[in-house]
Structures are given as structure tokens and as C-alpha cells.
Image 1: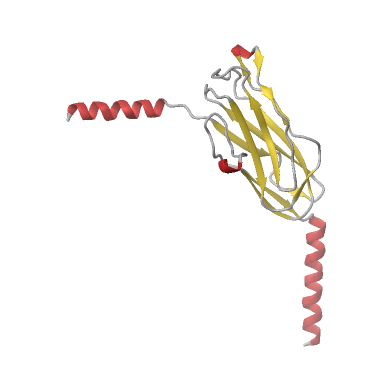
Image 2: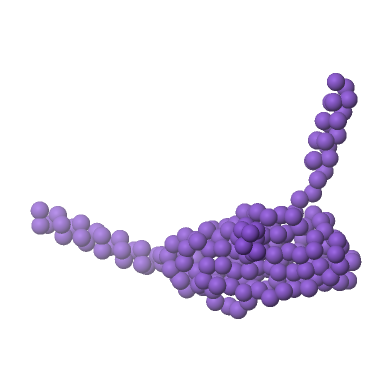
Length: 186
């Protein structure tokens, strides 16, 4: 019994000491108006992990944002005390997705040595009122699934494009006018 308790305590201690990579997607504003620029920033923490490559594509589920400003900007991860950058691959965006990171280690099994690196930024143009959920592509079978130091699923973000205040005010006045006109007829 005593040995079992020691074994369980050891496993719990090792599990709590285990490191895991993290990714965060953040929009630069809480809400946007049609015509505003939406900037998404992806940051990651490797937690000292090693990997051969990292890849990540964000998917958009509603057409409230149109890709507008060239390829995403990704920073190369660094190995060997910051002396050797990883090799960055090409990135592209389409109507419903955007590749945010595509990098390969110059040396197999080398830990990343940069502190919490900025992985990538990309800008879009808000084109319609609505909400778009932005999530990582996790389809490993399709060849584009998220892979960031063993992390293959992470939280995304939500983009809200709202009507301009003057548009909402005009709609409200129009509704009020219809209500008043309807009462006069009755």
C-alpha cells in the first residue's frame, strides 16, 4: 500500500512538471465596423520543447472578413541560443482560411531558445456585419492540421463586425416611423 501511494505521488509530481506548448490567437479590437482592418496576432510558447517543424492554418466560418494585406508575417523561431533561425516556409490566405506558421528546424531535435515568440500576424478587411469564429485547422489527415511542438488543437477567437451607430439609429427611426404609421391607420 505504501509503495502504491509513493508511485501515485511520483506520477502526479511528474505530470505536474510536464511542459506543454501553448498557442493564443488575439484580435486587436473587440468589435469592428465594416471597412475596419482586423489584425490577428498568434503568439506561442514552446515550453522548451523540441520539434522538427511547426504548421498552423486558421479557418474562418463566416464571410465577415476578406483577406486584404498580403501574406501573413511570421517570425522565425530560434535555436542554438538564438544563433540559428528556423527556416520559414511560404504562407498564403484564401477566402476561408489563412496559413499562420510554416517553419522547419535547421537541426533535428533542437529546442527553441527564444522567449515566448510572436509567431505571426495577419490583417483582413471587415466586409459585412456578423460574427466569424476563427479556429485552428485540426484535420491531420488533410495534411494541414495544427502541429506546434506536439500541440494539435488550440483555442481560436471570434471576430464581431457590428453596424455603424448611424446605421443602427436610422434603422431604429425607420421602425419607429412604421409603428407610428401603422397606429394612425388603425
